[in-house]
Amino acid sequence: MAKKINLGFDLQEIILPLEHILSEKPITDTIRQSVKYQQIAASIKCVGIIEPLVVFPMADQEGYFRLLSGHLRLDILRSRGATETACLISTDDEGFTYNHKTNRLSPIQEHFMILKAVKKGLTDEEIAAALNVNVVQIASRRNLLSGICDDAVARMKDYPFSKLAIRAISKMHPARQIVVVNQMIAMSSFTEKFALQMLATTPENLLAHKKPKYMELFNANAIAQMDTELAQSRAQQEDIREQLGAVNVQLTRLSTYCEKLLRNKLVSQYLKKNHPQELDDMMQLLEMYRTAKQSLVA
Image 1 (spheres, one colour):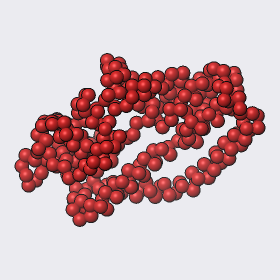
Image 2 (tube, one colour):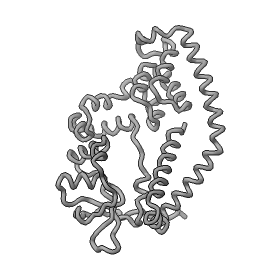
Image 3 (cartoon, one colour):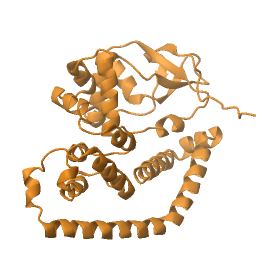
Image 4 (tube, one colour):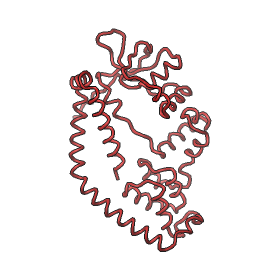
């Protein structure tokens, strides 16, 4: 029998007056000047609220709600003179779940997101305004995978390959691209430097174009040295993986236990009331561990 899954919020959106949404997180001028804040503000200006705010009914104030997720969006809406917004009603009075489940976009995921926006009829200028970036950057991100074969893209899409690394890979033959991408994933190295090293050691017959002039500076000795360093790096990485294996198991168990604790309504309320700083520190540590674990997946 399939296990029943309890939803963390009501599926039906509701429209709430902003004055009935209470935020306990102060938004400072430093936060308002951050890139993230400016991008969200630009997006709201162009396309409005995409992700509803998450709120929970106040027990002692009928008709009022405590904000669990969406503090920046609420601040921006108020600064724009808005009077109401779409919200989701949470079934639990805790914000850990919503603030914890955040995934950062890789350059390749950004590329596909922009392609979808273009397919819906948005221009580069409109997308740039929504993301608060230069139009040239949108064109660059839209053409990010030009010259990359489909098989290589399928392998790369879930990893944080840098834009410059992708550009270096595009100069190789499709068969070589797949080999290099697999090697970079195995090494958990997605930088331009690594990709250029692989490009420098690529035979002429596996290049999509003539080797760039600056690559002529790489002589046989330099290439041999790169191969040696690469082999040493692989050996060192295997040693490190073995050493961290046991520690990672312990951290995984600990983080899982802490997450369960924070999802407990009584525990979450107690920590928030009596140890707010420790609760915030714990949430940040869990987020740091989750992000680090994702970046090390090979």
